[in-house]
Length: 380
Image (cartoon, rainbow, N blue to C red):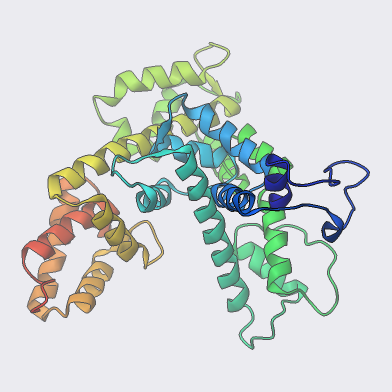
């Protein structure tokens, strides 16, 4: 499809019409003639598409334009555009992917780079599927039986019915296509959009919280009930004086029927806007942190990759100590000092020190101190 789209765009393909009686025509029977200049144009067209068809390019353009009429969009807007297309990545992961493509360091991408970002997302998804496949195929048979396929889908967060398979099992390429079909099934993507981009298990979790704080069982949260729920789910936000005006605006946004209460659908809308606000706040804090600590976007991206090797959004103090000590060959005394750096960074951020966990922004503060101490020098 991608090759045909490019050929047709340059009027180089004769006798091949998609969605017509000729749709089943073998591509080998299609007539086309290419000169050197035309071949160059075709190659550039395919490269610009990054392997996407016309239909996919139109969807990506629509998602991009929904966020802004400008030529570039910022990282928070990029995450929203990706969600609209069915890519459910954490803000931290989107930020990491953007940094890899952000040439001038302004955390903005134009449409061409946005397309390349989605190609990175697709490649990352394929690698994740392959990793799960191989983990369930320890004997390297090249196949997964139906039980293993169910396990693989559950591991990918896509537990669902599997199409009828051959008794001998399924190969990786077939499984990749199944996962792609499930993840980007139009019905599933539309359901995500209707649920304000919360997945099914997240909606069920929100529903549980809603019922817990709907004390009178009315099916609506009064303002006081909503405040109590916020204090439980977002304690840092709920207790910030500067958050109160935003809370009023947020309530007005979510309260579609203007009755000063929120039903469950309005509550989901409220939580989505609040989560987006948190991400936007983190985005601004991220830029300020890089400027304060003197890290470039490239350095931050490298450190983020280092941080993500543990595979989670936070690390324990001990994990950070072991990771840094192992990478820089630290002495026991220096390793213990890393723990002090961790506590100082978390305390300064206002996070709960008792959990002894550190997020990426606090990790940047730790790494600044490690680098300033000279522990990462070549002589070390």
